Image (cartoon, rainbow, N blue to C red; front, side, top):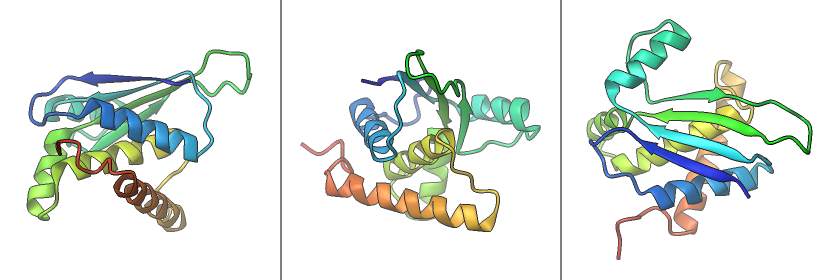
Length: 153
């Protein structure tokens, strides 16, 4: 069983933590990833900009950043897959500009971040095509499992 930590350090958007945990579990299960722990951090635009500058020498705000922690192949070792940092404010701005749902955009960023942690990349066009296909697949599963509207009663 994977411990999924949610660290909500922003107050722009109400984060449906149980839905985020369900999405993370779904992606890890579908990708057949066995890990003991993973943390998703929801941070401010200022924080994501600082992280982006620190790790990628780019001070601009970004949607998400993934930082892998443990690449241990030992089946008996406690494994922390890594950290995903998501900026809800960037999601909200993007969603407003493109007439999208900000929560759905956040779900996409979480999926994107996890895919990076498990080894997918989006630098080369061929890799980006694979990653976009995976993102679309998981967003479809969210709808299929009725996780897409966490605020519905």
